Image (tube, rainbow, N blue to C red):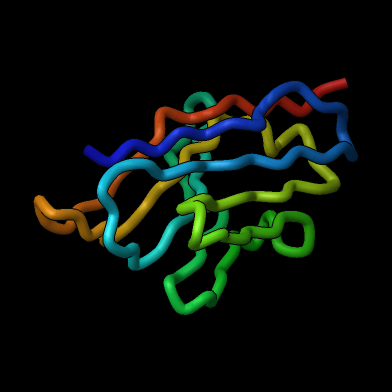
Length: 120
């Protein structure tokens, strides 16, 4: 059974920084990609940043230049460094793993989310 566990969320003032981590556990052979999504109250879940197995990255326009996604393949961990945070970044942030190959087959997985609140 694959599990994704996020950490690093919290309360930060505007202009501050946070670093989110997501660790994937289980009998994992490979991933196609991992990413971070967020969902604010009353809004749909949106992609924040993604990183493919080859290392290419993509970002939502709203976070370009402020957020950086990275990955440690040896640790099955993906990070999201968030700088210059704004109140509109407030949301629950979810980790996603796509095309995860395990002995049972290939599936996508989600973490339970971590709350990020940007407020003075």
